[in-house]
Length: 245
Image: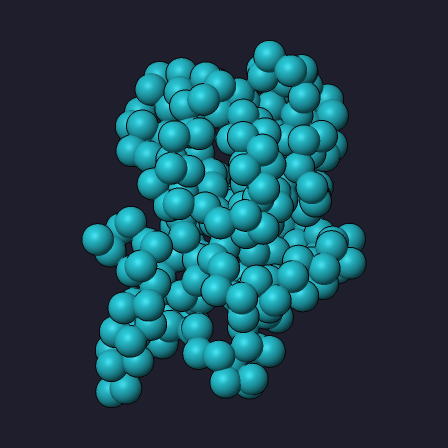
């Protein structure tokens, strides 16, 4: 039997198109708010644990990306810490909250939190604490998946229930989209969704910012002018960016 290397794409590409269309209104609201925030000197905080940590990593300090993004993560919440370690900490309320202290959040700043299931204690607790500090919280989560499972947070709340806005990743309970047998599926969609939606919102915002004279987009350091431009942006970003200190 020949292998079918196009099956994932056949599911994922239409899914992404539907996801963008379904979230168009909320994405426009977030992009508009982001333009105002950046002009006022605010940053965009982005959090994810486990494989959702790919989201802040992807949006942070890359060619074509925005200099105002501050990733929130800890080594014990990265996939490289190993499944038992990540599983324990991301289910523990308060495990991610201390990360906020490192970046000195400003009232009114946005915090994007990525979690396919939206049920783990660390992420829900971080969202609750962020709102107490006056941040505007946005869940990037699958409402279908989250609604089908119970929260692991003591409040019984899931991420989409505690955040100010929700960007719905859609997809399936369990994330995997392509059935292999009666009981096993493969091909997760959540990372593709968060990255597509996140870049879409940021692109809409930085287009207005750059065209209005507010420089905030990194270019490739592998181009003649890229490194000089990036150093100037990095100098400004380093005032808040703990990774550059």
